[in-house]
Amino acid sequence: MTDISLADRIDALLPQTQCTKCGFDGCRPYAEAMAAGEAPINRCPPGGEAGVAALAALLGQAPLPVDPECGSVPSQLHVALIHEQHCIGCTLCIQACPVDAIVGANKLMHTVVPELCTGCELCVAPCPVDCIDMVPAGRPWTGEDAVAARQRHQHRQRRLALLHDEPAPVARTLANKAPIAALSSQQPDKKKLIADVLAKARARRQTP
Ligand code: SF4
Ligand code: SF4
Ligand code: SF4
Image (cartoon, rainbow, N blue to C red; front, side):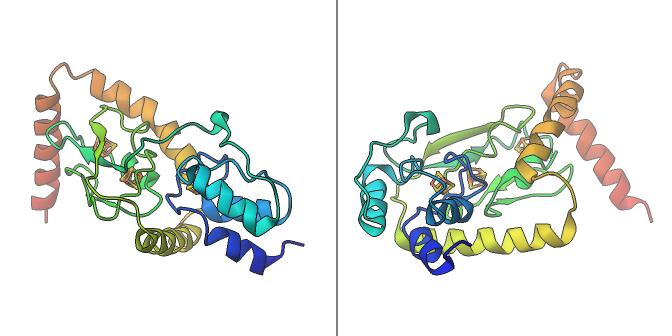
């Protein structure tokens, strides 16, 4: 059985970006796997070598280089930026964001709240019109950010558990990308597509 208190102490050392680069569905599952002795300590690129060293000290293990198979992260924090003039309001990025850092609604423009963004990049791949870029945040990722991101992720997980009996959001958003991208590519002019979408949304709102 997993030692929960050890998992808590491990989790406290993880950056909480919830990026899944470790191969787990967020920081907590990775922490629990390490606590159970089922995962190595070097699978968190956002934590970097310092993070591995902290885990090594806690667990009495030798430090290791970060596993390159887990990918890399920029040397400074980046956050997502939605080019709103191209957004078609499909909501896939909202569904993918592990910390609810994106606001918007179906058929409406979406935007990222940069102060809440962890830089996890999980919203980038699902966007069917490629209108999300990662840009420098101009600030570091702090311990306070990590605590807040953990809370937001936990809140989101509880909400999703109540709402869905379906595949995990990341898998679901990627599965939905192709049909929406195909639909949008049938429109040669993105501005026309957006105008059509907004006109339909307005018409629906005006319908009693
Ligand atoms: S920050 Fe990303 S790679 Fe590191 S433990 Fe959390 S989810 Fe895994
Ligand atoms: S806005 Fe995108 S990059 Fe930022 S936390 Fe959400 S999914 Fe990750
Ligand atoms: S995934 Fe892209 S097109 Fe869809 S709502 Fe998000 S930013 Fe807009």
